Image (tube, rainbow, N blue to C red):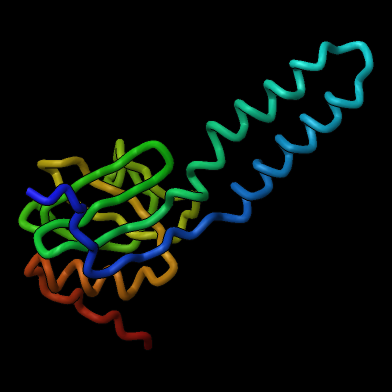
Amino acid sequence: MSGHKEAPELVFRGRVGVWYQAVCVAIAVVAAILALQTTLPVFVPVLALVVGAVLLVPLVVRNRVELYGDRLEVFFGWSHVVVPYAHVRGVAPLAGGAGQFTGHLCSTEFGGLFIEAPEDGDVAVCVSDNDALASELRRRAGLGEPAECKED
């Protein structure tokens, strides 16, 4: 074995919601305000920045879906989810209802995709081109395209 990691066939970059960006900015502002307080020890604002960076930045930097020949891999912050296409039972827009509850919420936006894979745990993602990802996943998993909704 060569030790080289297999290259993905397709990569979809994750989208970061405006609300999430606002949270990141708010934490930086709070740390800056704490740094200006002369009554606090210097480690308090440093600690606020470090904790904020460790918890929030990975979700922005490591946010993508990679498609391989036999599986999809979702990278979201500190988490890494692998789902073989054979386990995918459905791909639908993320509606946020109770039927789409998942332990693998890999999205900082609400308009993403819900990937139903009961054996591995369903996954919610939001990428730069949700429609292209949905079509590609349906094709690779052997699922038919959903019926088009006609407007009256």
